[in-house]
Length: 448
Ligand code: PLZ
Image (cartoon, rainbow, N blue to C red; front, side, top):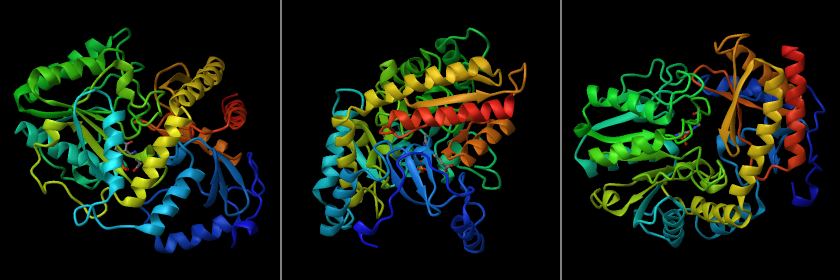
């Protein structure tokens, strides 16, 4: 089909069949005989194109996307500038492998990472393909740089699905069930979860609770790295109490351990700053990035203090596809869009809209127990009447009702009871408002 023959697509929510429609149903049937059942999909409709904030399915439906492909499409999933950069790069060079024969775009991306990540110190980066792969490499760097092996992760953490990162990930089903054993010398400490922590617990107190457990069970002198999501994503969009992150970072510094910020979901403008660590003036030793960095192409990175990164011997990093040139070109275009369009400012604006609207909804419906987040990374914790008991079933029913009306709203959380709002940072205001109207209708219908 030529560009001019493209069907006209609605630039607003537009549902013309049941969800899933007939074409999507056919695809579901084909899928069942060839795609492994372990691969899930939140939405039952199949998508063929996107516009800012919108997904167009194969049956002519247009849905508002509040999930951004799991926090990836901050600049959109069809940004013309990214598409043009990809086209240009792909027509010149799709691949050489940087290990075999280097190219400029890799160096350009590392220069951007050195400029953008927190701290004015000298930095080095390594580029990889997926978030989990980057977290694994951060652990390798920490072990090489410290000569220690213990790695520490938090309750409610999510760091990926490879064997090492599953060990860091907290939640068993569905992530870890049946897949162990996991790599040794990974230790878990309590997180700061203000909604579920004792009333009034400060960030410093939560950090002391965590560090006391760490000192007792592992010993500070054995710790290579403490790996932390500055805003916990899959665990339930949990913002730690103020003071928690800086206290952990200080402990790391005092004990010669690396503070590793997993900014895979929270990074690149999502929380209203380039990186979520900045909200508490934390300067991590290593910053891990992926997801939004490249406008939808697979790219990830570890960026850190030069002397730590360079503790890894020449040839110690690698991978066939790490820092692929097309992904690097997409990253450079995406970063330019974030900078020129002040997408951190857009994230703060979206966050304000979400907080006002969701706050009003929570005031009406007790089941919406807490609205929390930073910037355009906002979660709503759903509980049973007059308690703080998680209500995953209601969260799923709300998400399903929104989906049927053309709003893709995802859930998250250790208890599966958090509605997650992760819209594209180029989502037009009118679409966000319409999506929130739909959510409101669904809440009235399901909760009363
Ligand atoms: N660290 C903080 O959010 C990926 C997971 C989706 P990969 N989150 C989405 C799923 O269910 O598999 C993530 C993250 C944080 C690491 C990762 C892992 O990144 O690119 O999925 O490997």
